[in-house]
Image 1 (cartoon, rainbow, N blue to C red):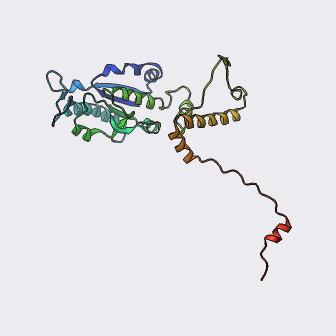
Image 2 (cartoon, rainbow, N blue to C red):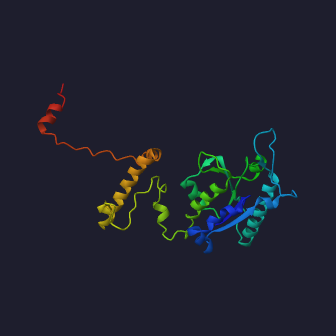
Image 3 (cartoon, rainbow, N blue to C red):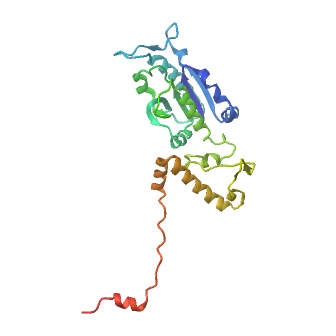
Length: 265
């Protein structure tokens, strides 16, 4: 997967080079390119913002530097597609904004199937609407609150999406059993020692009985979701309603059957 990030502050993305994502980059599973929007300003002072028409607080990022930075990225992508004989296709451009669709694990799975992603990070009071209308395919928020810019939301999304790329996680099952992967929060986890601060690991987890362990984990995941995220629990129960109790069949005697039978006229 190739990820291009359009930003005014490329230095903020240094943490992406650490830990699991850092190894993924070293192993060429993920490629992350940082594009400084300021480099595409035609102003001699590299100015990229101006006052908004109609007045209002703050400054607005101008359309021209953003669009030219986007065009440079697209030229690189099209050249690579040509080299690999790939079909020309619309590359998804994600604009991080509190006005967007709230990011979810389902959305992360969808985006992890893309070969190229472009993240556009706004700053100040946002970006000129005209360039957004021209290049953006997805408006995404990481929550109902406002941050200084789009850099932190972009890092959250990139981390979430990247770990779903095949080969990034050492254990391929990890992403399949984590919270939100199946509509539930993840079950409690325990490690050594068996007893810590007088708290003991549940017996079922050291029983070696795999079927009972899986049953316990599902039960705990459901209970945890019900307690901490009742909204998720309600959605899960709509898809997985509890089975109705089995009706006990009572034997009816022949005498009772005769009494219940209507008399012939």
